[in-house]
Length: 191
Length: 191
Image (tube, rainbow over all chains, first blue to last red; front, side, top):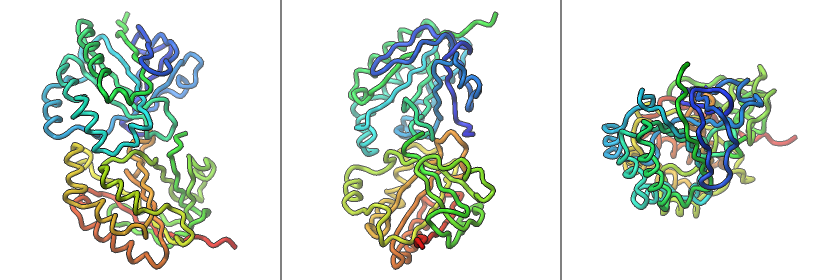
């Protein structure tokens, strides 16, 4: 099993309560009460259970667009997932169009950063918003999305997070997004 | 199942006779008599059979380094796999070091092309040498290699192919290759 693999299981169990599921573009995902995040393949029983409404997987991987100076700024500013204050979160699965994937590396980079300022926009919201990006396009299974990004933040920073998404979604890069679902989450308090 | 997935099964069956298996760097692969190439996951029975000596998988994917002008030159010159004259072939599985994957995109591109001329070297051997690159690093399973490249060519072009490999293996990019196996193949003539 790839040690960089994470599974996201929407169903009845898990540490995160699903507060909303909203399609931004394309088809939505079915409602689920909880999100269970596994490092690895997860639980085969859970994946196949009728209580499971969706089961998404992705791997963290090497940087695809970032340059060394950008990386150093990111590393200096970013916070890790799982801070005690980060009790709100979002899982945002995205698929990009065939036109995006047909572009060469230089064309995608120019659109991603020089034109759309994806890295620069994200940078303005560090360290409040922590994130982990997972790639799904090159798994052996056919996946419904190309990327899964998991974000966490303090409840008071959710408006900040919404502002960041609004900026990103207004870029030309986002005109290549053909499916996007916005799943909001709240940490379940142990009882 | 990902429609871009290919499986390479070394064992007793398949259209390609294995003429040699040689480790260039790191551990070799066990001897096998034949190579069976499947589009897709292949045959579960075959993958698990004791006759199977190794079972490698990878997906074709979007371009990672090539620029648009380079891509246009490649597309104009390259030949497809499977020409009637291309009765010799090679499968070359490669793994790159952690240091390679820790680099940012601009650093990897500079090393790959500006310093090592990977694309430029390959270009000189088109259309004689046809190739298909498969990525294995971001599959859900832990794979022994990062890339599988399958090449085919006419028997008379094998010395040309060897010259190309010699040039590539002498580049600084190759100092980041920590496992490489060179598997040579000959098409089985239907009887």
